[in-house]
Length: 397
Image 1 (cartoon, rainbow, N blue to C red):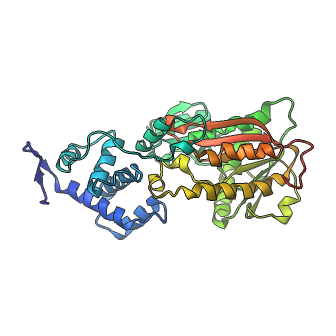
Image 2: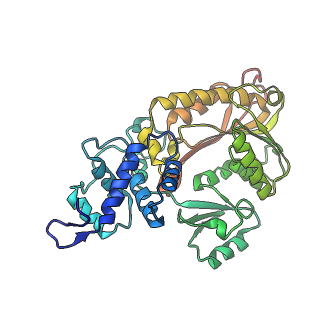
Image 3: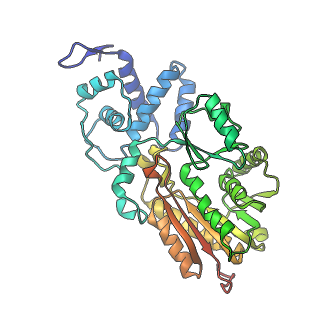
C-alpha cells in the first residue's frame, strides 16, 4: 500500500503511519509465541527497535492487545482484520484514520464469535455473557489506602492532579496513572486490585466474630510479593507472619515490600508448598493463607494473550497442584484454626470444587465468595474461609 490511501467514497487520506502501526502489530503477533507475558515481550522488542517513539510504542502495543482480546476465534479473518476488529470492540477513543481502515479492510461492524468458549466450566454465580464482554475492557488501576493514611493520600492525589474515585479504602485510577510519583507505594498505599482488596471481608470475619479466638500466628504459604500478607496485617492487627514461596526472587521482593510497609514481625522462607516441609509441617498456625497457583483466568482482561494461548487441560493441571498444596499446608492449621483459600480463577474446578473436596475431609465453610470483578473493571477472584474442626484428624488434613 502507498504511504497514503484514499478512503473509498471520500477524499480523506489515511496517514502512512497508521499502516505502519498495523503492519508492526501484525509482525509482533507473528513473532510472539506466548512463552512470556506480552508486556515483557513488547518491552524487549521496543528496546531493540529504536525507531519507535513513545507514542508509536503505545499505539502498536494497543493493537497487539486488541488482537488477543478476541481469543482464538475469528479464524476466517486476516491478521489485519482481527487486529482492527479487536480495536473497534475494545477502544473508547478511536482516531478517524482507524475508522477509515475499518472500511478499507472490511472489518465487521458487529461482534460475531466466541471469545471465551469454556462458559460451561465457569464458577457458579457468574454471568457468562457479561464475563465474555469484559475481555474488551482494560481493567482500571486500584490502590488500597493503608490504615491512617487516608487524608494525606487524598491530598497528594489532588495536588498531583491525578483523577481518582474513592470506594471505601480503595482508589480507582486510570491504568496509566503514575502513582509512585505522587505517593509512597507500600507505605501509604498498596497497588492491589479491587477484588483482591475485597478479600479483606474474610479477614474481618476473624477479627469481629465474638465466638472466635484471636488470630495471631499466620502462614502465607504462596506469598508471592506479599500483598495478601500486608492486607492481613492491616486488618488483623498484631500478628506473627510466616511467609513462603517457591521462587527466591519473590521472597527477595517481598522483603523489600515489607520493609517499605513497616512490617517487621515476620519470617520469610523459600519453600515448595506442594511438598512436605519438615519445619513447617510440625508447626501449627491460627490461619493459613493459601492464595494458590491457578489458571489466572480472572485476570485475563489485563493479560489477554493468556486467553489466546490457554489450553483447557491446564485446568486439571492446576486443580491437581492445588490439592497437593492443600494436602500439605492444611496439616499446619491447628484444630479450630482457619484456612483462607484464594484463587484468581473463574473455573469451578479450581474454586467451588476444591471447597467441596475440603468439606468432604471435614472442614467447615464460614464464608465463600465469587468476587465478580468483570462487572467493575477489575479482576475476578474466588475466596473461601474454612475452619478446621477440633476433632479433625491432622494426619490427613
